[in-house]
Length: 175
Figure (cartoon, rainbow, N blue to C red):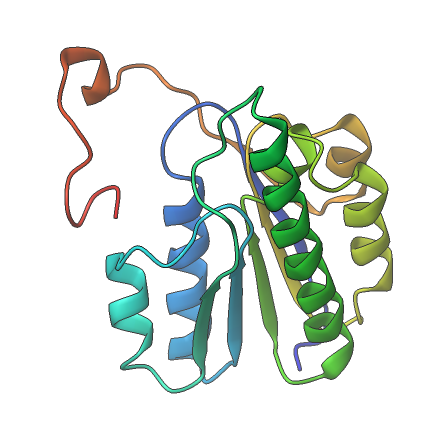
């Protein structure tokens, strides 16, 4: 384990939150650290990061979400809440296990915004984090309480996005 584990948050409306977390994962893995990324909203859709991680012993990425969230569909939201609850339980197990030097909770903050889990759930994980563990949180709309508790917060600001010009998601860029 590291001497001083950090809580790092990548938030904001701009693209790059997951990409920044994956950059940290790659850097940590390259230093011989064991890394786990739990994806709270995403499900296995064959993204490039999963293909890469399959070839990297010690870097584990687990999509645990139920996919794209459609607001207003209460039956679908119940499915998303269940998936987020399972991801949260997995996060607690990972944080407590001592098996990892870095745990990344991808889109966990978006799960909070959607009401799939609570702010208190995330704050509890932050509080329970062992001293030597790096904990990385991504997603939009981070609460002031999480910002105050984190060691590093970076906000991605969207200035321009190719979606605005009708360009769809690109292999190797968005997935």
